[in-house]
Length: 329
Image 1: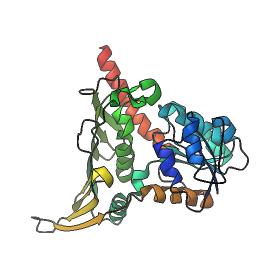
Image 2: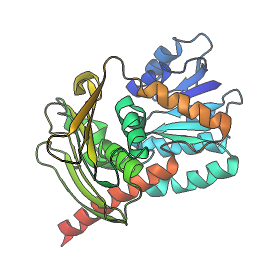
Image 3: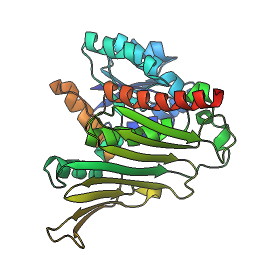
């Protein structure tokens, strides 16, 4: 397929690395030098002036949108309006309201829109989902998860710290991954409780977000997203009546990805333990793109689509609204 990329920063460049047999034919970015640098990697690629000129090209089948949050929905809408399939980075927009018209338009134009929830495609999490679906844990009870990084000098002056550009702070950034994964394992949440705080970084968005989410069946997801973790951390635990699964690390600075399966024996006591390690390159980006292509070819519903992004944004917005109401009281 013929691919266009809107947004040629670090994520756009990473997406370009995993196109496989597909051809990059056009790119655009507010920084033309950055766009030219990415275009130079492919002899068939040209630089477009803006979003609209790229989205309207008849020789593009799908568009990857990897911009800052304030542009994600605008770029996705433009591509969908011109009949392109779209892979848009999470959270796909700043608010759920930005996504609802795109969802209707995508259905009308019969195009696939996939949101960049690449964590579903990490091998440890993928294996964990398979084990849960096979009944290895028995009935699921709850999820407990932590995801965080330590920021960097000047973090509070980047676009992520500007609510107009980002839409929110850490809960919207890394937190939506935890929400999406929790929904993948437990289903939809009917009750949302949470709090946010800004304790270290001098910025108008939160540097920590805490969630307690409840399913209609009474299951709970207890989640913490932080950019004051200091040492990058990912830990996702799924608890069932018959055992527990724990995924640690995502590769790179988060440490080697590892899945631990603790199977409770009838006599209880120390569980039977099995571990899998996934060293080397993070393969989630390639696996997610391959899944996206397969959905285009077969018409299957993508794992991590616009409806999943809408559900995650709705949860974040409810927490933000509660925090705003408490401040006003």
